[in-house]
Image (tube, rainbow, N blue to C red; front, side, top):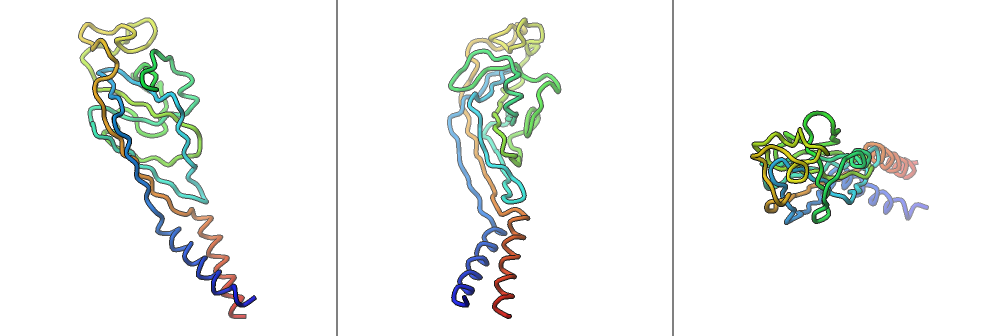
Amino acid sequence: MAGWQPIASVVIGILLLGGLIGYTSEEVFSDIPKPSADVCAVKSEPLAVPASGSMIDIDVTLTWSDSTIWLGIISAEEYEKMSKSVNVEGADVVACPNGNEITFIAGGPGSGDTFNWQPDGQDVHVMVGGPKGTGDGGDDDDNGLPPPFGGGGENDESGTPFSGYFDIQSSADISFGVLLLVILAAIEIGILATKIL
């Protein structure tokens, strides 16, 4: 029995050290369509991210290259409630929020060009909003959708719902959660105690 103890102790020690330090995963998403003024869109395909919790700690930071637009994370339930217009390159054009009618898990209007997010394991959708225009935002339209799909003021932008492209950088800091660290530490202590006894 004594032969495996040093090896197991070293392996658990390495896992503990690696779990405490963690690692960072980075990815860049390029050429994402940028909504025009007063236009918002939601990625129609849900984004599945592992949950951050007692076993694994995940902190996600999203940063994008254009501060005139905003990004937000919404639940699948919130996405299903939305009225949708056309779908362009995998994104549904939707009405922009004028108040608190949309609940954001993270980000949203006023988020600047970055936000942090701890995923809970549920499917989510990414929502993006274009620059603020000079029109009335489509408050008087019939279907609640933004111009050019549902009315708006005479100064509202018309034509394509997207104008150019932007990039998103995703950075995920991943480390062991408290519970997993405690379990590994208990195993390490047990192995050391067995060696001593």
